[in-house]
Image 1 (spheres, rainbow, N blue to C red):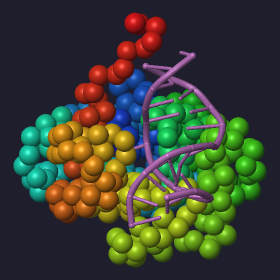
Image 2 (tube, chains in turn yellow, blue, green):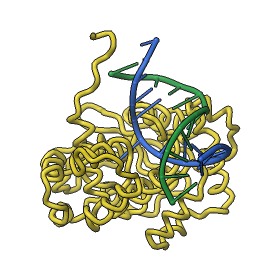
Image 3 (tube, rainbow, N blue to C red):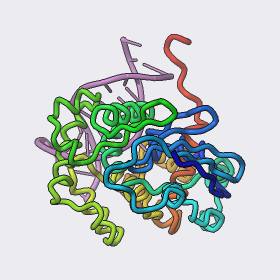
Image 4 (cartoon, rainbow, N blue to C red):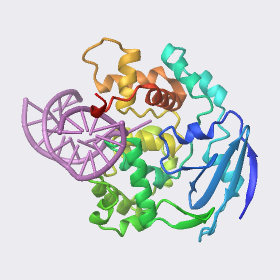
Length: 296
DNA sequence: CTCCAGGGATGAT
DNA sequence: ATCATCCATGGA
């Protein structure tokens, strides 16, 4: 059981983990428990420091990197956040989002874990995506012990490829099960090499990801941004589309999705993905939830 | 009960 | 090339 601290300035752990880019970290007292790849981790922020503990069974393959290095890499503590924010356009919506999201970093997630999770994300709220992620992990992921409780890694493509569609449906995936299974088999067979895709240019990577079952432009951009460190990638979901239309094109009818995509690509610059994440999280956390029918 | 969610695949214009 | 429809599931 290893334990240590690392410095983390301009970083807000809770904000980052709650921003809708990863879906498996759970609160544990003042900290969080989850996995970084195959490693079971507890991490707690104390000012500018991260207290980290690694739990349970070491991974069978053995991790090549040191744990402090893996944590710093996973949370992208090396990203120059001030420079990134300074590159954003200077408009009111963006300023409000930046003020709201201080310390939010775009993480570097494992390729397969991120791809598989976002395949399950279509037409699902964040809470539902978390449920599906946990179900897949508990059913098919490798378990480890941490603080006397079980922590599960995300299942490998090889493991999911051996499942039936019905088995995946038991994790409440619905129609997404078919796509996840098909993509898992492509990755498992080696027909698609997710690590090799990292060498491609942005447009080529986007095209290759969109060729996978269950992956369209939006999911491809999420995977590019959250797993391949393509900080220009700008996923447009229902929230961001709403923000763009309301804040950047008020009372303009007939604005195609194509035009919104072109606008966001040119307006938000080389770190557009960061800008997108700030706008997304700000909108999601400040938009009042609809009253329940019962309350009215 | 209804409405909607970090969409994508498919088939019709 | 754009547009409509369907797809399962569960919170609010």
